Length: 206
Image (tube, rainbow, N blue to C red; front, side, top):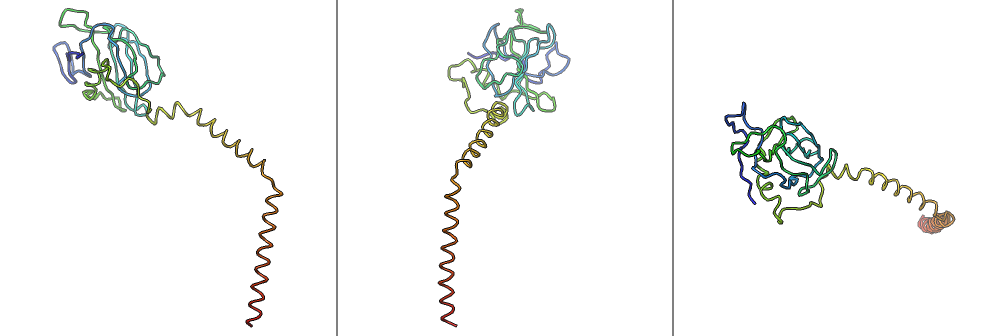
């Protein structure tokens, strides 16, 4: 299903005081909204103003964020880790909306911010949004981004290191030190025998 784009990034319709900060997709209430990036969710509710119920997905280590505005409901909470293709919420008409068609103004506002807080053109995600409810869309990404993987596995990695150190100490405690002493003694005996042999050869020459 293709969603009609009703407003492009930077577009300034008559009701706007400045260029549009994102892209608007016309949708009915309740359309499933899927994540277009791996990241960490943040849920905000601006009430009847701005984008109303909003989900942000912070990615690239939190430097960038994709913004979903005017939602009717969410299935994620602030701090949740999401992957591309995960369901994050449902489209709606919360917040401040203006409808030129006479309806309730239901649509998805998709925004993109960089690490400096500046709005960027989110056109790179148009295809993902248009296909997010297509069965061929990536439903789940098993390869997590390094930043997210660090957050997920930091505790398990730490415990793994401690387990390895413990195993090392256990191994050291199991060493038969008498066997080690025998090897050292035999090594010295070998060197002593061959040293005597070399000494005899040198003595015969001189």
